[in-house]
Structure formats: C-alpha cells, structure tokens
Image (cartoon, rainbow, N blue to C red; front, side, top):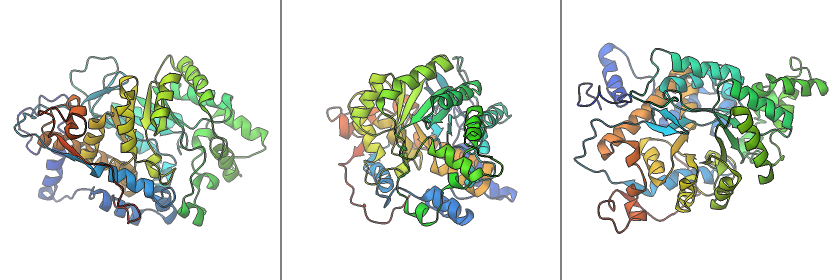
Amino acid sequence: MSDPKAPGVTQRNTPAWGLYQRENFMKENHGEVPPFNTDPAKLEKLAHETLSRNGWLYASSNAGLSHTHLANRQAFYRHKLVPRQLVDTNLRTTTTTLFGHTVSAPIGFSPIGVNKIYHHLGELPVAKVAGELNLPYCLSTAGSSSIEDVAAANDAGAQSPPAVKVKGAQDPAANRPPRFFQLYMPHDDELTVSLLRRAVKSGFTACMLTTDTWQLWWRHDYVATSNYAFYHGIGAEVGLSDSIFQKRLQEAGIDTKTQPDEAGAIWIDGVWHGRAWSWEKIPWLIKTWKEISGGKPSLIKGIQSVRDAMRAVDVGCDGIVVSNHAGRQVDGAIASLDALENIINAGIGEKIVVTFDSGIRGGSDIIKALAIGAKFVFTGRLWIWGLSIMGETGVRHVMKSLLADFDITMCVAGIRNVGEINRTLLGKCFLRSSKENADCTESHPRSYGLIGESAKL
C-alpha cells in the first residue's frame, strides 16, 4: 500500500507495513537512497562482498552438496498462489497469536548462533529490532552474547518510541511477543537447569529444544578452512557467563582469559559433537522447564517426520518447529515444506502448535507455509545478511521489507487476515470438491529435478 490516505490505513490494528514501499520510493525526492536491495540473491551477494571469508563461509555453507538447501526452495515452487479479485483488503490485519501472545505478524527470528561473526555487536541489534517490530525472537545456546544482555536489548527495542503496538489487543500478553530460548541441551543436568533458570529470569517465555545438531554435519568449506568459531574463541558467551559452566572450567584448570579457544571447545563439545540425547530424556526436560518457568510452553525444533511429530505430542510438547536446519544438517533430506505438509496431513496441527522454519525468502513463501498449515514461520538467513551488511539498520531494513512484502501480498491476493490463510487455500491439493476454494492455489506433484544444478535463492 503506497497511499497513506488509502481507506483503512489509520484503522488497521497493525502497521500498514506496505507503506515502507512508499517510504523507499520517496527517498530520492529527499536526496536519499534505500539502504540496499533486499532481493534475496542480491542481498546474499552483497553480504558476500561485506563479510570476511570465514564469516561468509560460516553463514552460507550447507550440509554436503547443498541438496537439502535446494530442495527447501524447490518445494515452494510447486505451490502457486491464485489471487482472488474484488476482495476488500483495505482494513486487513497481519496480527496473530502464538502461545497466548498477540504479535504483529506470523513471522519470527530463527535462532542463529555466533552472530558476532557477522557483526561486532552480535545478537544485540537483532534482538532489539525484534522487540521494536513486536515479533518473536529466539536466542541460540550458541549465541555470542549473554542471555541477560540479549534480553535487555530485546526489552529496549520493545520499549523504544518506534516500537510497534497491536491496537485493541485485550490479552495480558499483548505487545509482548514470546521470547524463545533455543536450547542445545548440555550433557550436564546442573548446567542445563542453570541455563533454563537464567532464561526465565531474563524474561524468556518458551523453551525450544533443537534436536538435529548432536553432531555438526560435514560442511566442506568449514573443514577446508578450519572455520569453526567455537574452537577459535567465539560463540561460547552463553556458557562463559554461566556460574555452573565457570565452575566446570575451574575444575578443568581452564583460564578463560588466557585460554579462550580451550574454553570455547569445552563449551561446544559438551552440547554437540556426537553426544546425542534420546526421547527418554525429553519428559525430564519438559518437567524441569515447566517447574522453573511456571508452565510456559516447550517445543522441539528439527522435526521432519510424522512419527517424530506424533512422539512430540505423546511426550507432552506444546509445539514443534518443522525444520531441517535450513539444509545445514543432513544432505539429501526431505524439504522442510514437504515435511510440513506430511505432518499437517497427519492431523498434528490439531493437537499441538506446528510452526515452520527453513527456506522462507519472501512474503508469498510465508503465505504458502501458513496455507499448508503452519501456525507461524521463522526466518533466519535474510536477517543474517542484513546484519552482515549494515548491522541494526540492515536487520531492520530486511525485516521491514519482508513485512511489507507479506502485507502487500495479502492486499493484492485478496487476503484480509491471517485466519484466511489456511488449508482452504490449497483447493487443488486438498479440497477438490469445493468450487469456492478449488482455484486458490495450484499445487503440483513433488519433483526435485533441479537437484545437482546450481542453487539460487
């Protein structure tokens, strides 16, 4: 929406995100230019030019030959939106709820570790922008800033003058989006409990256990350049700021000031590197988190099979994140969007909250994932590129552009609210007998013909 006087703009309960398009169109009139191009391919290219070699390789590398990464994108291609005409979308809203929290859009910041590789302030500007935009933020256990500092940055963004507010929201958690602590669970229960207590004390309202990274996958560029931040003194800040882990280092005779590489190695070796957990441990984690947090939600991130999704329901998870780690953990794996489709078809979304991660690049991708059945989506690489290019300003530009893209897509596709983005949109695939819904999207059979060719975003 480029006209600030268009019908419904001032009555909308969420920002008219599409006005960010107009804002950038008008910059030349004031002797300004937009920060940078947010086309994903050009965004990635600019980040490549900005980052150090190792920073670029860390951000861009995928598992093996990148076939899963490519499959993630290709899965979106087979679902085609068929826009509806003459729908009054002037008073549309992008707001939704997640675990009882009203948020400004169904988009969150994926947990990505070691942000200091991309910018010297690490996770702090990212958390600040998330708070400012009223979107959920996820802190990784592999973060390069402490739990407490990230929480403070997120709060600062939420309390800043430009912070987004959802008008008219009545629930107690309105305008306070869920703050996720993504856990790589240490093989040290005392340390795990300490991390969870710190997260709760710092205002994190959900625990997201990632289960697809017991061992880092073979990433050719990492190995060829010895490019592993944790072994080079970066990425252990969540652990180094923990009293229990500090005690472990003292017991091992490690001085963090003179032996940062050794300290980082002990930290990451304790949560990854062939140390797998099993389903038998999950009830303990859920019980422990619930006791510490007062019953706040727990999720598992990395679910790709219907069987595992059912198991998550059985053990008492409140939600799952359907994700293949953006194609960075198992090469040749199922596309995340295809896994989502399988899981929704099995009825899991009727039992727990199903969210989606891996492969989002634009507003139509968000709509496709929601239409298939995801309650919410997370995105990561886009804002990482923005952080790499221009720090806080870059993250804000990327995410406001994504929100504008999503908002404008809703406008021109005839979608008035997030509730209208549901399985009825997949008429050709799921509702063949319904004339009303049968032309909303074109969903074609699964095909991976592009495997082996150069991947493009």
